[in-house]
Each structure stands twice: as structure tokens, then as C-alpha cells.
Length: 531
Image 1 (cartoon, rainbow, N blue to C red):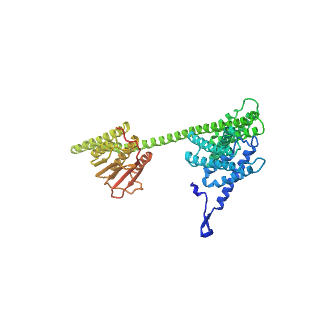
Image 2: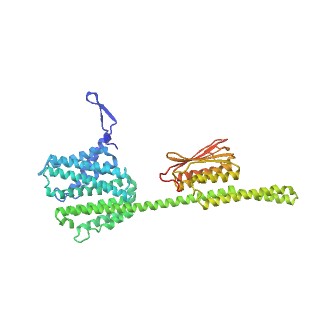
Image 3: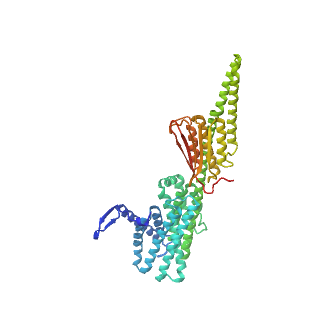
């Protein structure tokens, strides 16, 4: 979404000097106000969990703003600006108001944080990405760390220039600011991405007994982890791993939010081991706990999602291979029926005719019958050898042009056809793609022999700028494409082979011919056939 499109303006009105000024739509204004309200509510939540009057372990508005602009577009930035103004207006009054220049610097840093975070997420993850791979979770981590780091740096500098923070406190102030925003973003953004992108699927994933038990277990174990004086701080991690393995990203993000809320809330009310530490250590310990918990859960969830996706892909590939194997068996059976079986059947008929002629004493009929039987037997042998060669060897071992030339010579000599081959080399496609193109050409020539009653055929294969084109043109009877005819199954087989290698098949024909079968396959840089 272009940043210049932040005003959704279907209506226009004439302003002063006759200039037409576009006004935002009611829906857009309502959305901006709703986002500002959500931002303010998130800020109130963060302020309610402060450890002191000025130190918060987590800052949820950072996550709310980044998630909103990432999911719905940068044009909603006025909602963040309004929310920031409302939240920061409280810092202008009170017993120790912030200097105006420091407050302005803080607000500029917060706005930059949200805009940079949303833009980086769009760049690294793409729009509305699923957090189902370690690479995407890593991109999320990088974007949030960079954006919140920018806010912390700008905010700290503004406080130093306003004499709000002493120079010797700057590093601690910077660390607390960054970890607070980073922890808030890590809790809010993944949950928003998962639940806003596919809410129905996310709800269905956790709307189970496992999901209900998970919420109870995470809340209970989180409370036990920080309310006990015993060293059981990380006892909640088994429940988080359970969420990652059983409930995927929806359950994992909910579990992280619950665990973080319980830990921060109890510590803010002086409960648990973190509350007994000095304020700076208490804040650091809580922030590190939340960050480590969120990162561990997100990465484990991503690995589990990758494993599930790999299993699904493997199952789909197995089904596809099974379907292809079945289709190949059907093709072999059809070829046997149309070639070898027909030749043997004709041989049996001719043999019986010759036997009857011999029994009737018509010796003059035996010679032509025996010659026909011999020709049919040679045809069956040729067909069987061709099939055995095709099944037991790589027909394109020396390249597609040579394979096409051999096939054309064999088919032409066996059936009295004139077959010309024009093929350029090398071709920038891999061995598998060349094999599929050869199979398409072999099937097309077989259809010409069986159905077309052609006298000449032209096989042409050439490489263009971005694709390789294989054409088989015959001067036979032709047919009307789209109608059922004797070669329909062969055409479907060729179409399937072309699609398997990322290409497509085109058939142009008409009654009386000619017929053109064209396969178009994209080139693969670096994929030329090996010498």
C-alpha cells in the first residue's frame, strides 16, 4: 500500500479558491479512531503493569501499532499518531512533566518504530505471511528488533537532550526501553498475524479439549513459576512446547500471551522471585524471561509447522506418483493393445486363413498369407523392442534432438511415413523436461500412425527467449479439438506431461487436416543438457 494512499477519498468538495479537496470516507475515519482506541487501551494495559511510576516491563502498543499497519496497510498511520498524542498528553501534566522537546522526540521515535516495523515485515515476510517456518520467524525477529531498537535510540537521545536522564543511566535506560518494546511486539505481533489472517482456522485449531486444557495449564504453571520462591521459574516451558506441537501457531501465540501476562502481572504486584530484585534487575529479568519464552515457542512452532508441511507434501507427492504410475500403466496397456496385441490378433487370423487354405488344397493362397504373417510378426517385434527400450533406458541420454531423430527414423521406416526433424541444441531445460518432451513427441507420432492416415510429418523443436517449443505437424485427416476421438486419451497423457514440467499443450486441428500438437515449456537457466 502506498504511503500516499492513507486517505480513502471517494468524495470531494470544493474548498476555498475553487480547489477541490478530497475528504476521507466515514469508514476510514471510523477505522482510524478504532485503531487509536486500541492503541490507547494497549498503553493503559502496559501502564497498569508498571513496576514503578515510570518503568514498565512490556509495552504492548508497539506490537499493536506494528501489527495493524503490517496487516492492513500504512494508510492507517493517523490512528497510531492520534493514540500517541493521547497517551503522551498525560506526560505534559503532573508532578514531573516531560520537556516538550523530549516528548516530541519520544513520539517521533515511537512513530518511526511502528512504520519501520510494518515496512520491514512487509519486505521480509510479505503481506499477511504465515509464521510456519524458521525463516519467517527469523524475519519477524529481525524486523521487530530493528524497529524497536530505533525507537529506543531516538527516545534515549531525546531524554538525554532534555536532561531527563543522566548520561551514566543512558545505557540502562536504552536497554529497558528496547526490551520493553521488543517484548511487547513479540507477544502481540505473532498473535495478531496468526489470528487476523485466518481467524476461523485458528479458532478451529484450539477449540478442542487440548486447547482448553492448554489455557488452564499455561496459566497455572505460569503462576506457579513466579509465585514460588523455589527455583521453578521455567516450569511453564513444557506447556508451551505442548502448545507448539499440538496446537500450532494459534495455540502457541495464545500460550505466550497468557504466560507473559501472568508473569508480568504477578511481578507488578510484588509476587514471585523477580519482585524481590532491585527495580532494574527486576525489569531486566522479566523482559528476558518474556523474550526467551516467546522466541523459543515461536521457533519450535515454526519447526513443527515445517515438519507437518513436509509430511503433507510427501503424502501429496506419494498420491501424485501413484496416480502417475497408474496412468503410465494404462498408457502401456493401451499401447500394447493398439500395437502388439492388434498385430498378434491379425497374425492369428491370417494363420487360421492359411490353415483353411491348406486344408482346402488352395496352395496358391499360402504364400501371400505367410508373407503377411511374417510382416505382422516383425511389426509386433518392432513394437515390443521399442517399448522395452523406452522402459529400460533413458531415451534422451544424448540429448533431445538426437532422440527425436532416432524416433522419427524408426517410426517413418516402419510405417512408410516421411518424417522431417528440425531441432536446435543445446536446450536450456533439464534432463527430466527433455524426457517428458520426448515422450510427448513419441505419443504424438504414435497417434499419427494409428489415427491420422498422414503421409508427411514435421517435428520441430526450437528454443525461444523464455521457452522451448516442440511442434508435431501432420497432413492427415485431422479432427475437431474438444470432441471425443480415438486419440483423446493420448492427448490427455501429453497434456499431463507438459503440465508436470511447468508447460502447457496446445492442439490445433480441423477436419481434413492439418493437425499441430505444440508443447511449450519454460527454459531453466543453467539447465542445459549435459554433454
